Length: 223
Image 1: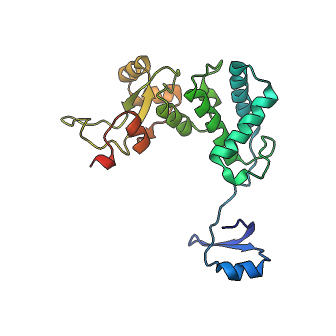
Image 2: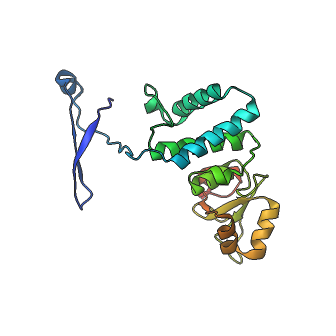
Image 3: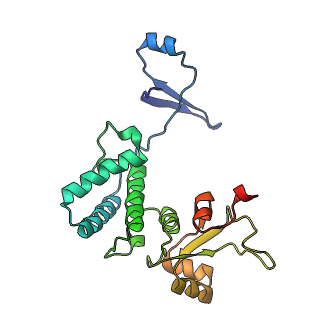
């Protein structure tokens, strides 16, 4: 498999796009018998000033906790991010000065996941530093952290299970949920889902196989 850069030359209402790419190794093209190609659409928008501030604030929180030199922390997480999330960037420079909006958002999500996984205390609530609320709430659910305060969480089902149904027997995959500590879970039941999510600017996430396994909920594989 090879990677070749191309240019999108046309796109129509049927969702068909035409990509023009230059490939000069004719001998290899014939020898390998290439018939199909995979197209990766690169986000051409560069990250915003707000994204850059959030990413550096998260790196600062990690750096304060570990006591490492800021440049070492930044370099370590740049390399770790590429190795774990974007192997296609292995030979390229990743920088918060000119990367895409999509890549910056993924890096912020990666840092938040690391902080949650290692119980790193932060001076600012993580929800203020996240770039995508749903990614943040999913990370909290994955690490059993309250999406509001970061304390140990249980899962609140936004989609009511329904009268007469047993949560141990129904399929939870696809149902909306929020990871909340006991105190915030009780608050939600007092004021209701809509007011609670508006107050804390949260969005529920759909339970998938991974979340179902973490919370020992019934999933499709059990059916």
